[in-house]
Image (cartoon, rainbow, N blue to C red; front, side, top):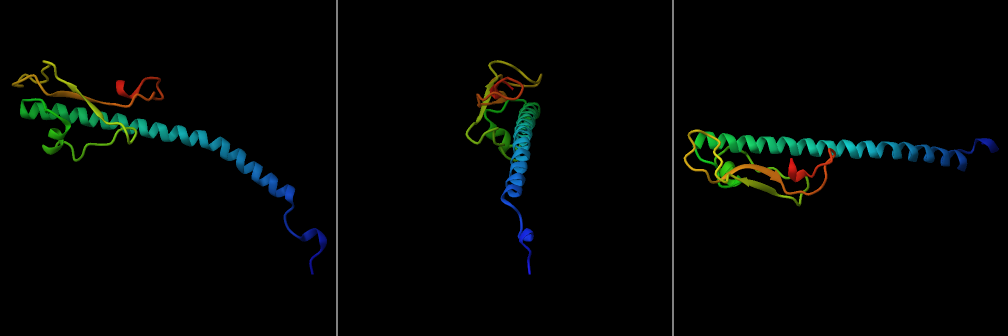
Length: 131
């Protein structure tokens, strides 16, 4: 037989617990969002570095610059062309415009680098397409 004071949680105690949980969630969400953004930006930096190194290596090995990222991928320098920082952006290639990356390079056309096409502003205050 239960006594009157032993029936369970009161409405006030439940509201107090829910309020504490909401406060903790309010503190944790911005930290989580910043860490996710930092991870995406780090991934973008690594992808850019990897692709630019692959373009350079292709140019050194073949004595000519690749004409596109597909040339670099099909030659085996990249397993696949990675996605940008957002799913909708693509990669913008930087044309050689007469620049030569190797003393053995035969012609000066093709691509010498790659950038993101995203115009969103990164955590450092610059647009992703300037990285």
